[in-house]
Amino acid sequence: MRQNPERRTALVDAAIEVLADQGARGLTFRAVDQRAGVPTGTASNYFPNRDALLVQAGRRVFERLDPGPEVIGESLALPRTRASVDRLMHEMVGRITAYPSGQLAMLELRLESTRRPELRAILTEQIRANLQDNIDFHLDTAMPGDADTVVHLYLALNWLILERLTLPDLFDQPRTDALITSLVTRLVPE
Image (cartoon, rainbow, N blue to C red):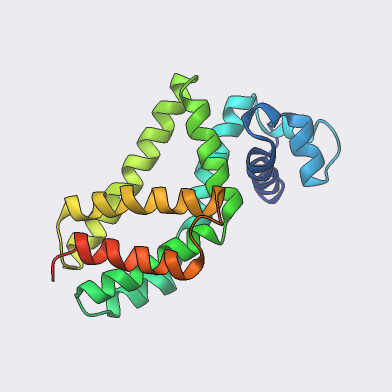
């Protein structure tokens, strides 16, 4: 397999865009090559099979959605209040909805995982680790609420994000903002 890291990343990013635009059935090496603007056959030189490409696409979405050290640093500087959790949840929803192809690709990967046990196992491990990282951060920084608070926010906000990406006219931005604040108010103790 080829090892040019920049080319590999470009191919994985192209795979994410194909998943978002065409769904899992549209994800072929040829489609990825076309989206990446590389010669036909390039993707097959980097990935042994389609499953490997699916797995790498899932991992890459999480990499691209990572808030980065600046946001983490800002989070650590906030007071330990419900208002701070509200601010963080608004930032998170904004960051995720600003990368719609990543979230839509993850939805496609989740659907595909219902038919592919190996992909299901990898996604489960990846999402479980991400959720645990969020729980640990919340608890380690002494934000109000417990592990269940984080899980409840995760579940509720994921569905709100789904609505924003798939049915954007259902809740406009002001209504979305109000819903985030309402969820935080109901779920996070003072």
